[in-house]
Length: 98
Image (cartoon, rainbow, N blue to C red; front, side):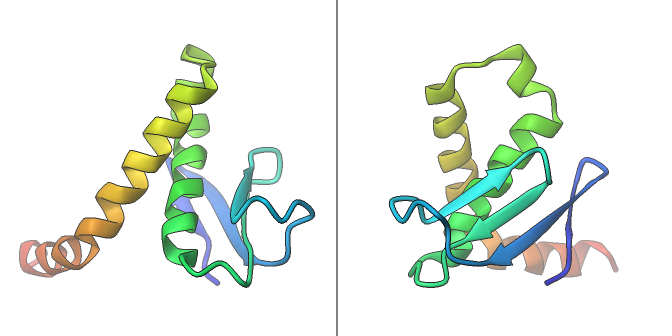
């Protein structure tokens, strides 16, 4: 897969079995890697949630607010925003680049 650009930092996405099966995906900020379980039925949504964690850490929000619950709420709403609007965002991108 191509790497994602998160505020200038390259984030790798892998589909790989995680050690802890209770998680569908995880973001490792030390390696800038998102790993998604191969059997996850919502891989794209899970990847977006973890992308939210990458953004949270890269933007400095992690240093400003170390509240795990707030981070999870942000990442879940971020993933909902993107997944609910991905088609329209792409259509707008095509229209606006003309």
